Amino acid sequence: MKRFGTFGLAAASLLAFAAFEQGNQVKAAGGPSEASGSPFRVLAPIESGNLMLFPVVRDSGKSLGETPFITLDEGIKSGEVEVTEAGRVQGLVRPRGTAQNTNRYPDPTQNSYRGDQVNTLVLVNNSAKPLLFLAGEIVTGGKQDRVIAKDRIVPVGADPIDLSVFCIEPGRWTESSPTFGAAAKAPSHGFMVQPTVRERAMVEKDQQQVWDSVHGAISRMAAAAAPRASAGSAGVYGAPAASSFGTTSYAKVMESNAVSDKVDEAAAPLMRSRDQVLARLREEHAIGVIVAVRGEIVWADLFADTELLSRYWTKLVRSYAAESLTEGESHAAPSVADAQHFLDAPVGGAETSEGSVGVYRYRELKSGFTETFVLESLLPGTGYDVHISKMKLRNPEPRIKFPQIYR
Image (tube, rainbow, N blue to C red; front, top):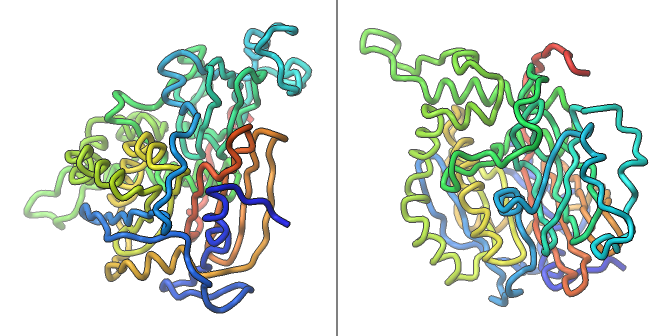
């Protein structure tokens, strides 16, 4: 029998997410034809231009209380979390026999690292709290900027881990700094990759497809940030080439004034009144949001508690806002019932899982046109799902080959 923790009981329905066919028609891939009742309740949306966010609460209204984790941004800012290229792993290894080194993890010095690698970084958690990081978070520096490929928990005292990443800066392979930092000019400008790029890293797990999605996102951001054409022209965005930014780095493009200002503008109603929005979410005990872009429901992020949602709020909202800037087909605005259906409709499908005994389990559920990813904490005193992300799969990006200068 599958084991579900406190939040996991609520997630049981979520593990049977809807398979959305084209046009948002729902088709159950196995299982009963009707939902048997939802542990979640969807609230009226918060709107911002092409973006709609539906807050999600537990139907019971119960809260787990404060969770014990430190986030990646918090750990990097405090210096308690270090991320570096694989070739520097030796300098991060904890001395054997120290009080911290009580967990049984493989000695990374025994791994056959052959210098720095595109899809490998090394992370060490020196914090007194377990570290939580999410797929889609960006670390900048080293020989190229990277995006984290999957959710994970790193316990206190663990040896350095192999951090699964993808490059989001094709073309550079020269060191800009020995270690990595969080991608943000300031906390208020924090961001993670937008859903189209995040999907490629999580679902396809393929470097070329991540590069393709990065190239497409940069081109669309360039078009969105370009000045309007003159009155005598076609009257559309100037749509400069991505190279106009002078970089292939997704992070640097997002940090550029032109794009950052556009993202801020798209997210303004949610960010100018950030405290009020978060106060409302806390009052309602919201634990996540369902995301609709141009009327199409495309994503959901749910957390163990309201506090975790609030700590990721800026990064998530700006990633959703970036997605809402790009051109695409518009649909009629979804209703609360549509968003509720997105959570509740049961499905079948393949499930895979990985993890570390006594630390975490990470499950991937594939079904039709959706995929769901569930990070469950197995640490003492937890036993609940920390983060759930669910996406509607989109058509593949056009394949654009980049020079394989570091493969």
